[in-house]
Each structure stands twice: as C-alpha cells, then as structure tokens.
Amino acid sequence: MAYVLYTLGYERRELAEFLKILVDADIDVLVDVRETAWSHKPGFSRAALAGGANQHGIEYFHASFVGNPKWLRDTAPAHADCLAWYQWYLGEFPDICVAFDQMMVGFATEGLKVCLTCFERYASDCHRGILTNRWLDTDPTGRAVVDLGEGELPRRTDSTEVMLARESLDTTFR
Image (cartoon, rainbow, N blue to C red; front, side, top):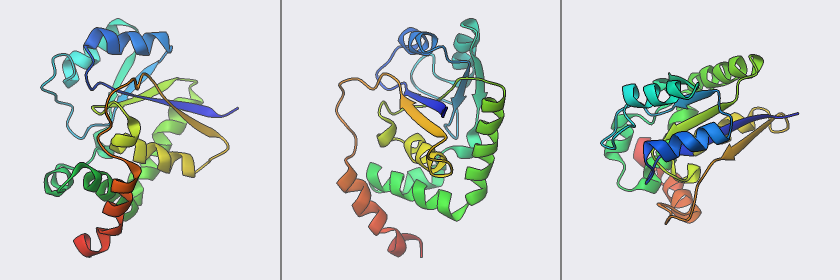
C-alpha cells in the first residue's frame, strides 16, 4: 500500500474551514512548508495556526527548510518563474529533498497521516506541488499525493507558463 501525503492551501479560506478539512481527512500532522510561517491572513501565522491545529488534536510542524527562499520569490518576474526557479533550487540543493524524504519516512514509520500546507489553493500553483512531485519521483509506486479542497477558484499559472519559465533558467542563473 502506498503512503499518502496530503496537501492543503489556505488561499481564500477562514481558519475554521481549513481546520475542518484537516479534521474530516483525519490528519495527524500539519507540516507548514513556508519559509517564514507568517501571514497577513488572520489565523495563519505560526502560533495561531499551531494553536488551532493543536485544539483539534493535530500536531503542527514548521519545515522552513523546504520553503521557497525569499531571494527567489523577490527576484522572480512572474509567479510561473517563481515556481520554475524553486524547481531549479531543489536541483541545485539536493540535500533539501533528502531531508524532506527522511522527515516523511519518519512520519510514515509512525503511521501518521500528514498534510503539507502553504498559501496557494492549488498545489500546482505552489512550491509544495514541486516538492511533492520530487518526493513522488523517489518512489513512484510506494507513494501518492492527494490535494484536499482545491475548489473552483481561478488558477495562478498554467503548465505552459511554468514550462516557458523553466526554459529561461539557464540564462537567469548560469
């Protein structure tokens, strides 16, 4: 049986709705994959999010080491570039994916159901989608990813934009 990793973005959600989705999915651990666990949105900064999760029996863990670095986000001319550059970043620093995999293996060994979180509603519009794709690539038959509650919101990017941004990486960082 495959180990399933869940993801959930908090874009356009209130904390109560977000927590209900986690509770309904029987999540044991919420892993915050933002570099800095801070938000303008009430309830989604580190202390408030951890407190809300803990009230529902969900452990909160901040995995800042897999966050999309501020210097990358600040220099990307468009959202698609930001995603493509994060993919490049993971390739340049493979220890990040190794550490993430070790963390996930630890949760799996304990039988814990884990959900990654970040802002963007759609995992494919977020660095967590790139991170989970790398994680899947290391064991495609023993792992699966399920995105919770994406809903009917407009997309930030499309696959063509991200592909074009990836093609521009060599001139940007080399």
